[in-house]
Length: 104
Image (cartoon, one colour):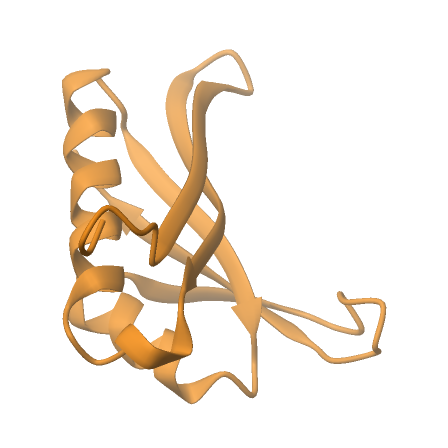
């Protein structure tokens, strides 16, 4: 929130994966273009990770467009690693990269 205006949002969840471990999933991250490069996205992701750690999460995963260099840099700076390329993942035909952050 900046001056009571929402300038960013994150959507995530935590559930059991293959009945063996708890997986966090980041479904969406958005920051108003006027407020980018001010650590808002980084702080949203960090807070989501902290909540997942509190929820006894083992790993966090997400997908992002392979062409989204800014998102890749943000996530990799937070310790995420490239796990898998997903061909034609998005409706526009663009490939995605699945990124993973191990918490344990």
